[in-house]
Image 1 (cartoon, rainbow, N blue to C red):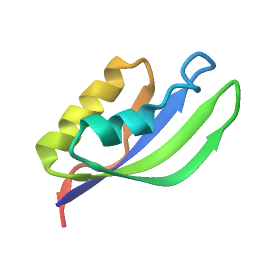
Image 2: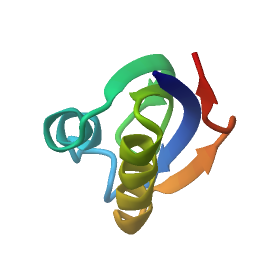
Image 3: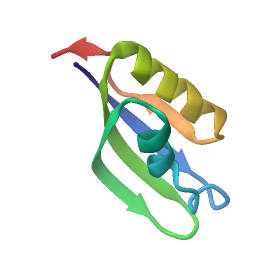
Image 4: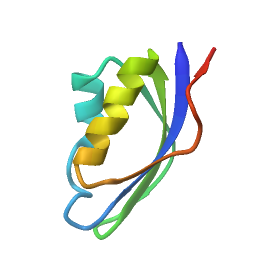
Length: 79
């Protein structure tokens, strides 16, 4: 299994969307929230995505299509 840390930032229009629920429902990855700060105008979340490399890559690619600011903090490393 592989793990990658990812920062997600959302603006006012995106903050109310259920992004983490969608990832856990639609992709074969485990999502662990490392830290978060979310209010009505801005949201920031650092998550750890764990799973197969291909599934993590698909998840990050999809997150980038949502308009969220997505920044991978680490590369995939086998555990």
